[in-house]
Image (tube, rainbow, N blue to C red):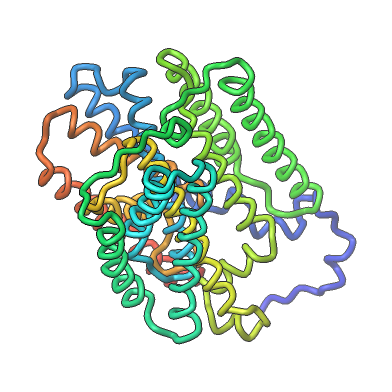
Length: 412
């Protein structure tokens, strides 16, 4: 058996060819490993491109027009915000089936306070968000403290909240919102040079600077360098998306204000999960709750706060939906829950917990929104849209299960 004297390793510099980085050399990775480890978002991106090209052809060039793409973005803001909360719950390996009901209920709370009781818009919005947070706290209590399965708790909650919103509306099917501030949340556009163009470019520049800084720090510390393909995609793809989106938006009315809200929520959630100890604890609990508990992590608190955040985001999603429709209704959208879960899973978040990024909700929501938008442009009935979206969700879950099984076999 070959042995290596540990003393012979001490004089070696991390930058020399014989350094400890050698076992992780990129040249020893297969193409499949590189794609799986570094470019895992590419299949989702390619799927989105295929969908866009298909509908561009079948709609005679209507799909990629600035006006339609702006409407598509407005359409996915509710799905994206709702799916962002779903991602948080999925990272724990749990599920929340009440998000669509919570979104509708909280929008009804806002509508009643604003239209029937005459409260200021800002107070009605805060009350709706607070109602969502309380609902999530209640769900988390049953799940974390009483150890009732999240599937049962949130399913029962969904049924109960559906009845509660009908009771609050007192038999009224639709409540029209006339408050200009609430209507403007999802219907205003930013076309100015500073906010409409400068702010997105500034955020992009900060993002690129952060990626370059982290890459150089890893190299200085002797850690494995990011593969060049991954680095190029990490910088290039967001740059193309941001610049291309700005050109399209400004060719119509400007950048939708709702998109700024969604991007801001994703950014804050990403910072919470990746730059704080709390975020590391969330991933740890999702990976192995018992190991996290033995490591000193308060699993109960993590679960309660995540369900609270999920329902809070659901409340914001309901506010965006009510703003865009200028009304709240007693009828819960039957496909909203499916779309939110599908957007999260299609984006790459694991149903088994502990793996996924909040940024994936953008690609997932764009795929779901593009399917629905393109089918609408082709005058397809509701049943066709539901069958296709259901099939896409099954494919995404199957892919997640197969990838996880392959990783377990390889010892990852």
